[in-house]
Image (cartoon, rainbow, N blue to C red; front, side):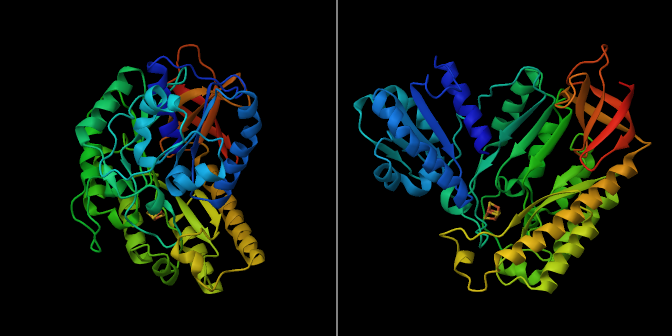
Length: 434
Ligand code: SF4
């Protein structure tokens, strides 16, 4: 989400006549778009901004600003800790950045903008598209109302707010006109898009499904992905919509699990149990060929017993995830779980983490092997990062495939590729036809 915000802000500033530079010594304005999800990320940002004190002394005319989650969380406190900072702009006020740069900062007073906004800003819709860009992110909502016990997001990103469907569709259309073939819809909880309700009962309606249906009508867009849905809101309407619009809606679903133990899920305040989770997975598996799932898992959450951990291992295996972001639990100040007494020691965290990682690699290797000898549609994304003589692209189920260049084809085309061999990370193949 931060990457998307940074891109939109940079595009907006470019339009207003600013130039971008990667060289901090050449910049007149230095902006840090920060994340607060992990304490480490904040410490790193504060350290980096602290170092700039010297630069500011040498070049007092430069402006330094902090944007995003850390600005939201710490506001004035950050301005006091880092007096060489000129402004902080929180997550709900980002669209005011150009105004601040044009009218306010010349007054040379520190500025802190951290008020919550109940509406999703409608101006952060510009995109800087890389040369030969094929895929773009689109932020469809902000904030989160779920209050998982380990997560700081609801406190720094505020209440859930969604964009109107026509506005998102308009943005997708503009991207399609610029040659984009694949879009990734972004939000902290995309499956709750447009619901605007904090409910304890799974809703039957799904405005997110309605949004997918509208985007599906845009012919130039060949693939639709989204991240991250919450299993609680993954109802039959959403499942049926994904099935109906497959293969344009890709057959790889990222469905955060977090734990395979009902007891731990309750302690995490995740609002689903393993039966509910598996029901979603099994319905999708029964209707979509070759569907794959990726996930997020927190290992060694406070109170996680050997049994709880083994349940996570078993569920991961039952679903057959072949990609997972596995995080060792780390307490985040300001969240309920950071005060739980039954924290797990570092050594056990490490051991359990390694076990899950090993399972994951074995499973991925096996899944990729099973793809050998078959033909898959690949969206060509560009040159392979390891071998400029080859192209690289992705299957619908989000596997990276590498294959020979073909002068008759272009980046953004979809080709049929026969998979000749594989590793745990990559498929290697030959083009059959386009
Ligand atoms: S749903 Fe995701 S973003 Fe929201 S509180 Fe839970 S973990 Fe955080």
